[in-house]
Length: 477
Image (cartoon, rainbow, N blue to C red):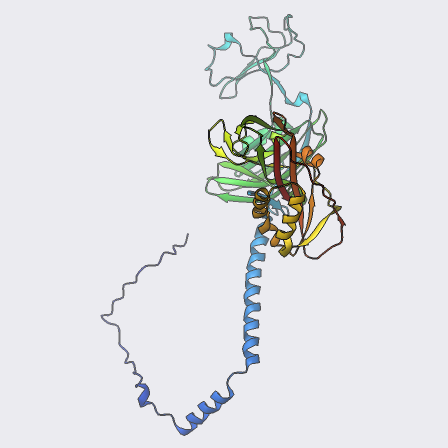
C-alpha cells in the first residue's frame, strides 16, 4: 500500500550552490517605453471579446461535466450492479453477470436425496471417542415401529476415515429405533473450501466437478428451494476484503410441488488467506420497481371524541402490515378518552391527542376520478375539501401541515379521496365501545408535470353525532 501521509524532508544546504536572485525594482522605478505604453493602451481599449469569455466558460463546463460523467461511467462499469434507496432500505440491483471464472449448475432433488437416517448406539460409545464418531443408518427403510430391524448397515467412521461395516444383518444388541432418528441432510453451503472438500461435495450431491486444480481455494454457495420445481440464479459480482470473499447473487424460485430445485455456484481463486464467505442478495430492476410501486399508508392518525370520559379499546385489523406506530401497538391500544379529544395511554399514562401508525397497503386504488390541482393551490383546495369530508379546522390544519410540503413541490397533483370501503380493506378498525360516527379520510395523490383531464370526484359530508372517531392519512402513488 502506498503511504500517502506527507512528511518533512531534511535538506543539507552545506554544499548547495547558491544562485543570485534578481530583485524586481519598485513599481515607481519602472518606466514604460513609448512602444510599451502604446501597446498597453491599445490592449486596454480593445480588451478580451465577451464572446471569447463565454466560449471559454462553456468549454470548461462541458469538459468538467465530461470528466465527471466519464468517471461515473468508469465506476459503474467496474460494478455490475447499482444501489437504490427506498423507504430507508438499501437495494442492490443487478445490471449484468459476473465476467470472471465461475461455475453455475442446477439440480432437482427428491426426498431420497435428502433423507439421512442416524442410529446412535450406546454399545458403540466405548469403541471410539464421541467427538470423532459418526454413526449412519444408511438403509432402514424396511424397519417399522414394533418390528425387528434386519436390514441395517451401521458405519462407524473415525477421523482417519476408517470404518466398520456390520453388514445387512446385524444380530447383536442395538437401541430401539425412534421416529426422530432421521433427518434431512441439506446440501445448502456457503463456505470457502479446499480442493478435496470441493471434490467430495460434488460427489456427495451429484454436481459435476468442473475444476481439477488442487492448489486453488473454492468458494461454494448452494441453495435449495424446497417445494419448488424450478429455480434461476445469477452471479453478478465477486469481491475480496481481508479474509472474506463476497458473492453478489440473484435467484428466483417458481412453482409449488413436492420437488426441490437447487443450484450451486463455484468460484475458484488463489488467495489462501481468504477463509470466510458472505453473500449479498440482488434484485432485478423489475423486482425493485414492483417494490417501489407498493403503496404505503402514511401517517394515519386517529382521534377519539366520546361524549364523556370513556375507556376505549382500539384494534387494527391488519397489524401484520404495520411499519411503525405510536404509542407502540401491541394487540390493541387501551385508551382513556375525554370528550375534548385528550387521550391517556393506559399502558404508559402519557397524554396524547391522537393515535399514529403507518402500514403497507394491500389494495392499490385506480385514479380514474379525482381532482387535478396546481401545487401552489394545494392549501386552498385542502381547506375546502377537508371541510366537506367532515374534519374540524384543527384536524384539517394538522392534515395540511403534514401534506402541504409534498403537494406544493409538484407542478400539478392528481388527488383522490378513498371511499370508506377502500380504507377498510387496507386497515380495518375495531373500536370498543362502538362509536356513533366514524370519519376516515385518506388521500391518494400522484405528482404530474402537466395538467390532465379527469372526471371530478363527488364528495359527501358525514354527520358528526355522538361518540365520534376521526382518522386521516394519505399516500403518494
